[in-house]
Image (cartoon, rainbow, N blue to C red; front, side, top):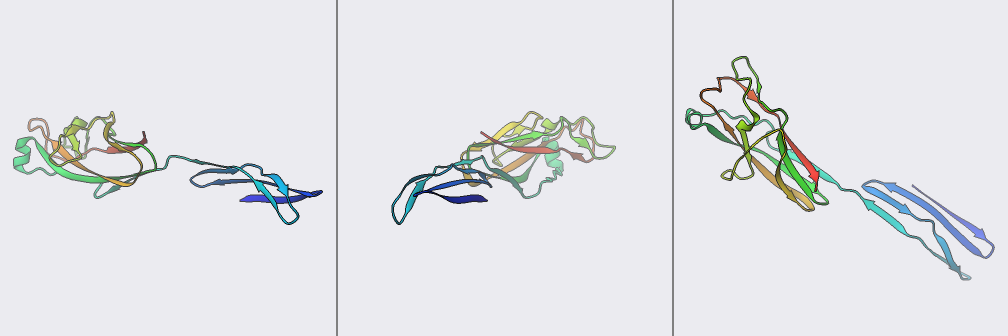
Length: 182
């Protein structure tokens, strides 16, 4: 809200005001000074400064739980590709999207599952037939860009299987997507 006062000062009027608005940034109006008055009007000027901060939003469309249930052929091949979610980036400036695993190993959801299955057994790509990169606890860059009203980034996952080590069971891996100002 702004406060506005007009005070008569003999034949001159002084206008002083101060406004602060904080919504997407900061808006400050500097005190105004009288420039001069004529018989029927007074004119004054002031300077308005606006600071707009970086605004970013990351949404994930689609299933955030991607189930990889390999067929016998995929298990024999040692990997199974599945469609992952689509990350949508909105930003008023430069940005970078990163992917990482929350833990270095998958969680064994039942007693029969392997307890030391590495996070790197999950790979990701932005193209279904593209080059896949192993997920690690250290973030990897997925994409970067400039101001956007909405850039969709489809993710594709490929789970790797080790026939000798991956016992039957359920495995869970938390994958983190992080949006940073670049």
